[in-house]
Image 1 (cartoon, rainbow, N blue to C red):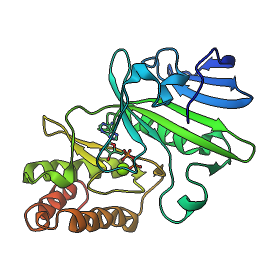
Image 2: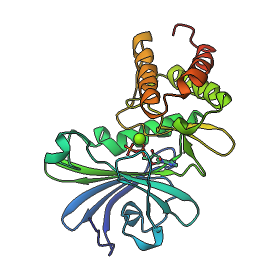
Image 3: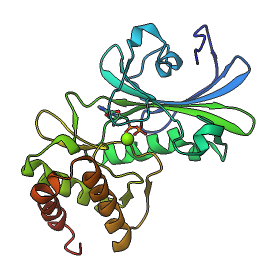
Image 4: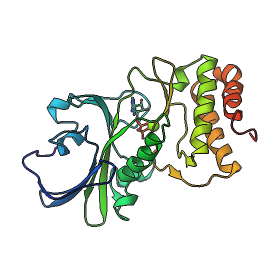
Length: 251
Ligand SMILES: Nc1ncnc2c1ncn2[C@@H]1O[C@H](COP(=O)(O)OP(=O)(O)O)[C@@H](O)[C@H]1O
Ligand SMILES: [Mg+2]
């Protein structure tokens, strides 16, 4: 997909109370909705296109579904993700989703969830922008987040103290009533200061969590650890749980 970047006319642009702009564009006969942090400068729409040359997009090699790029904004490094399906449905519709209202689109929902988590001080990347290209019954979506520099996935970390921190961070997320729909060892990143970050909140949500739901999140993480780096289970998993149990001692 390549967008033409010539003069998309903003038919409506309003500022949400907390500095996030909500923009509607009519472009090539299509309606496009954007949420934008002030850190995303014009041409804002082009920032969601990996082919936009000034972004110098580089495909993210690890962890994702080959639809994520490291991109450069004038003042910071970001990650651009286009929402794509995995599994069987992908053969039929790779990147189109059923329209159920703007707030329920994948990119706006993730943007809004990241935003409240980020504002609460949880270790998630700052959400920078969300885009939705609306068709008649379906839509495509993209998300921009701030890049965590020098990050590696938790699955590549064998230091127990990092796993202790990861356990604390997941407990904090649960305390904030957030359920992660895909908690795995690629969606927890560790930076150069050994800080643990939670990413990929696609399909996550905020709701009062039962002990069973919290335990499900943890067992999914353990399953992915067993698949990706089984040798770490003996040395790191109990330390992870120790960190988690500082907040919840029911697992
Ligand atoms: N904010 C970020 N900083 C650094 N790397 C990131 C960031 N967001 C995503 N990535 C990298 O891109 C990969 C894919 O992104 P992710 O949000 O997990 O999408 P998906 O798994 O659905 O493809 C991640 O596994 C990670 O390697
Ligand atoms: Mg992921």
